[in-house]
Length: 525
Ligand SMILES: NC(=O)C1=CN([C@@H]2O[C@H](COP(=O)(O)OP(=O)(O)OC[C@H]3O[C@@H](n4cnc5c(N)ncnc54)[C@H](O)[C@@H]3O)[C@@H](O)[C@H]2O)C=CC1
Ligand SMILES: O=C(O)C(=O)COP(=O)(O)O
Image (tube, rainbow, N blue to C red; front, side, top):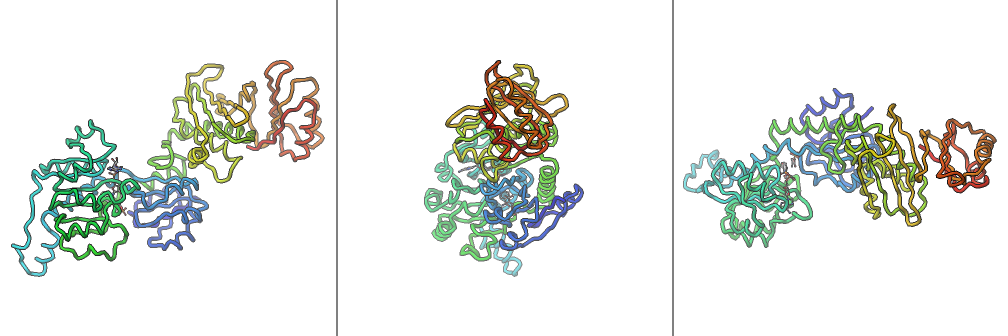
């Protein structure tokens, strides 16, 4: 039975969805890294929020894991590269909590503009310090949005509603999109120089880590106020403390911290710091959204092979997955066939799609061709990591698509170029949706692959077929099907023989030593 571990606090709806779909669920919150490593081999799926750290060590131990589902957006707590290498799909829920998080950023902006938390605390203490708390208006102020994606754009929209002017820095924001949003696209330095308030909405990556550092603070207006509801690592906390102390920054509202859970920080207790414990996504609405979405996405993948919102794999809908299924078998067979015949260093893999198949999402097909091809050559390759593994090894993957040209309404051809030769194998689906190999090295054949096959290439001369049959018969091997093809009379010929059991090395050698035989391979599918 498929098993999922929920290792962070998720709406109970997630568990309910998994169970309704026949998936066994354990919810264990607060595991130490060691406990997670010990538990993880028992699970096919892991559902998390931001607390669980899915490190390379966890993934190395996760021998059955197929998917990590992040009920939320940021995946900086998941080692995606290691997940890819281990063939684990990582998916998130990119929109479920974006409104909620943008609202938190706006709430934090008000909180820091009017010192609401401090005023609240003082009032509860019966101090009535009316003259202590002097705030600033938001109207007409300039808000600098760093990272204008889903959340940044919603925050910008709300700020415009508050009659603020919004400038945005985001290298990937087009001028048209900026216009549509009603924001002014600017460079970072200009944003820093102009903004009265700055709000951060980028992911934490090597490119954004410390984006607000001492240099950046130096470029800001005196008395700027900053909101961070994205990730702690975006702000250099030491530089921030200095900027608060020297008056450059009038106030900061932090929902996120460099190290979480943040139980101690020099920023804590500072009058100018408003802090919340990573609450950006914590509304009942958002938590229902992300829990339902992650559970459904994970169940779809584990049960039906549908891929949605994956960060390391192309998307495949459930309907596509059904239509793709016979093609996936064909593509895997073609890749595997080519891989089992490949003896030299691979340079490129060309995958040509013709006819009906071009109407489908061919990216998963390409991934599975490459998986099939690399599997005989190396361990631990699967659909998730195949393209990355090929790239790492400088193998070019070339995908082409054409209308149907020849005899087949649908057709896939895989051509492998090594440093010594080029070899191709092509196949189709017949009306029964069963895959057929229709050519090898451009020699026409018509073969249905069986678990055990013998591939023989030979010179097309009389006597070979009888000799092959006798050799296999002598070895006690029953022939199930026998497909032949030849380039021309007397030219290169190919035999693809389905046999009921795998031939041993002695039999392969015996076939190899038959007259006119060029190459023999026992193939497994
Ligand atoms: N506090 C909380 O509870 C929550 C925090 N988040 C954080 O918010 C982040 C943003 O979420 P979304 O808006 O949904 O992501 P998104 O992917 O829609 O937007 C991120 C934007 O950042 C931009 N960006 C990337 N590198 C940049 C750079 N060097 N400088 C400026 N912009 C850059 C991208 O072009 C993109 O437009 C998430 O990655 C997550 O870390 C998300 C949800 C809840
Ligand atoms: O979705 C995100 O990126 C968040 O940061 C939300 O984090 P959480 O799920 O509340 O731990």
